[in-house]
Image (cartoon, rainbow, N blue to C red; front, side, top):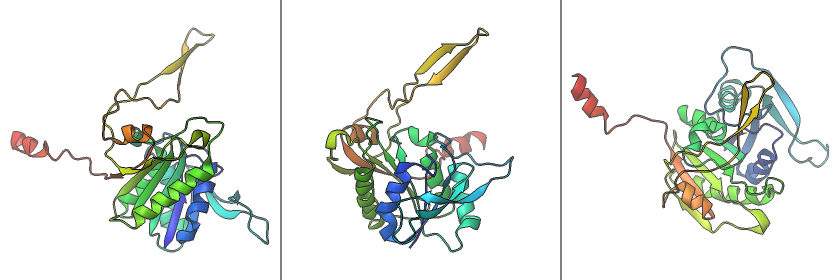
Length: 261
């Protein structure tokens, strides 16, 4: 199996290297990731400037013999660009699976709309490839257990690959907070929460009388509906949610056909 591994935290992100080690036994893994952090870029792609692509030799742990890490490819653009370029040019043989992550921060509920991690996986689904997005819910940012996160992610990915995974589908996986040696309570499949998030901004006055607004990095939802991915993740479970990209409201479509017909 030929796997494309990407992310939205950039090619130097520890979550990317940890996930590589967790999945390298699954097949031939090609790493194509953004040069810099691209968080919350959703499904954005680059149209109005050239995209610089280069080999990146500092990725991953040293290999026995040469002392170098895995040769990866950096793309000075968005996560979705990485997938498009990898499939069109950078990986010489057909790709069987795209995996995006591990993201530093959960991507549950409506946050999947903003996520560059999910956006990269969704780009693969557009092209008919099965794809998996993996994210880690963060408690203490100074003590993220990437090795433990990758172990659980690898187990979840293997469960997904053994199941009814189909083309055009994104499986969205989230690992709960692992602070202080905590372990997940289990694994569950759950729908995304449709609750909106609470927006908070730090306001700083500028010298010219204007104000600067800086969003606060907080995963706060207005509601935690029971049975949803948000509730399950905050309760300590690994969550799996299959996502599709057909956003048509099929219930309302016949009404509109009748209205305009």
